[in-house]
Length: 383
Image (cartoon, helix red, strand yellow):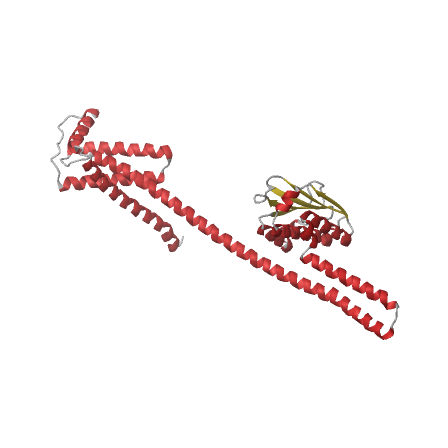
């Protein structure tokens, strides 16, 4: 262990011991003040204590009487009270519950016995009431110190956790910004490679028609316009689906499933058992992000699953909306489930609205394919 590590470990302990020592001194001073204010006859009490102790121990001999207040007796009593308070404070700090009370009682008993022995053999004045009060106050100070340190530790732990969550949130936002930038580039590539090229080909045909007047080009021109319109509509739907805006999440999910079937040629099943009030209660942001998760799941199925049948189901209970996207394809390799960047992006998007997304491959129900499960809490939704 390095020197710095030993210093860091010892420093809090040293500070705690100094605090407990200061609390013990303060406890002894307060006990002296309180016992004096209570008008307790400490001399008489000490003499009775010594006499009782003598009879208990069957010890014969005279008892030294209290000679009165002196500097030596006050100093001795103060040191004894502070020492007892320090021990009680240590017990109050380290122990809990009934054990703390038992140890405190034992400290009181031992201190009183020690005071009685001092009365039997020494002319120094002993103040039993002051001693007991010092022990009680010392124990309370140890307990209070423990309480404040635990509160400080909890506060520090919460602060560290908050900083970590803040960093994770910042990292997540940066990751999503990068992903959005990637998606914009893909959109630009789609516009360039598909729509722009189609328009260029269409322009060439229009120019040729203007020069030649060949009626055979008319059908090709109209087909090119229709194709460009379809491509633009698909891109617009990918950016901001009209069905989601006008008809809601369930209809948008069903249309997304149908579009996937047109591309990949699989059979579809759609089952919506979710309460319509629950679906309408979702915010626009929640609906959009959940739709993106469904859309990405269908896209992954079309690209990788080679599935023959794909289904989407929506259900809900009082606490959450559950959306399941199932396929009977070849499944997802375990290493891709752990390391896939696309799946990580989906988790980040789900986290923005408090949702959770998980992948099970093979699907536990069928034993093959993949199950994508999206769970959206409904704590803020009024059904």
